Amino acid sequence: MRKKQGQERLVESEELITFSSFDVKQRLRWLREQLNTIHQGEFTVKRVAQDSNIISHQGLYNLENKADSKPRQSTIKALCNFYHVPIEVVNAESPTPFFLGKKIKELHPNELTGSFYKLDITLTLTYPNGRVEQIPIKEEMNVRHFDVEKIQDKIRTECTWIERDLQYQQKVSESINLLSNKSGKHQDNE
Image (cartoon, rainbow, N blue to C red; front, side, top):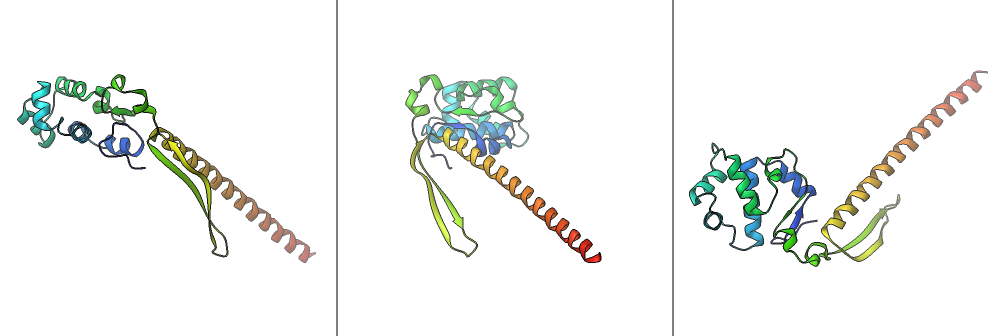
């Protein structure tokens, strides 16, 4: 499920995995660029330098773009505070999900928990003869992004268990066939 551009959100799942693959400088740049998309023009390099009093325009540009730049922890911490994210988001090898946007306490409860998506769940069943059937499971369900992630995880988990059960059944069937063939040969020899 793609998140809407310009939307405050919880950074999690695939987006968090991608974010985790970045180095510190790339993470700081990504945060600033995402916030600038959410808050049009408020997080350009120039505006961050002006509004934060943390780093100069050229300093922030170099931090984000020069391969040999090594930001100080004090600069990282100050930028994280300005971007309203915990410093662990930038420093941790595997950051935990975090909120991107206004401070959570500044949000109206509906902005964080309200329905943002319509979800349709349909099962596609292909019969051995090639016939395909669409089976609606749930239609037009109002969900938050958090709910979609939970539903995806639960479906993937169930599919994994079903696949394991089928593999086990296949092994049992193969064992039964093997035993049947051996007992049939044994009776033929008598």
